[in-house]
Image (cartoon, rainbow, N blue to C red; front, side, top):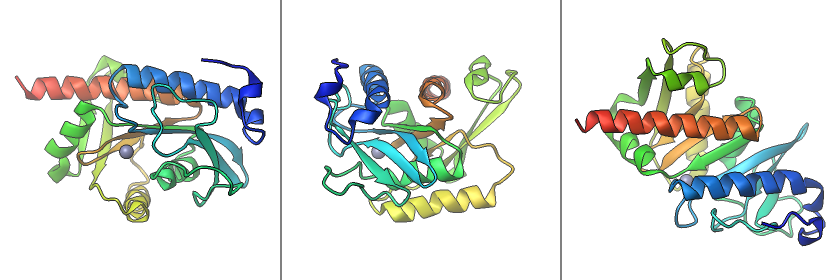
Length: 218
Ligand SMILES: [Zn+2]
């Protein structure tokens, strides 16, 4: 991967560090088999007021993201400046995590475990993971005697409708800490205050999902 700033389009040059960070994490997630076939999308917040995100462009190979495979979007998910490629289809979900959950970086993967468990637990509305040492990798958790609830939303290509489901859940469960969520037969969304925390969360949650899945199969 080249870090040379001359590889970047002029409007992306100021964000070379953030882009290279997302490229490195993207390669790791692809390497783990969680982001195959151009699936997944990743973002970092580059401005808070008003909100602006740097997010992967639609349809790119997440294992080999190039310096210009990213776009800048506003708080409504609109690309700005407008002469950029299309952003990821699920951009609005990133905007919601940034505006409602304090995310500084958002990572979304399509792993086998997230996909299968989101179907298995869908009728329960979510998946509760408790009493695992690895829970301590989630922000705010200090003991294995803890619990993480991952809500599961039904999949749809109507992303504003999916965003509305997520917002409704957050509104109705202000007391339930939310580290992420699953989308049925689709994948996992998680985030962190920065890219390092988001990357840790996705590794921890994917690990825990695999534990849950393998336990079910016994
Ligand atoms: Zn997806």
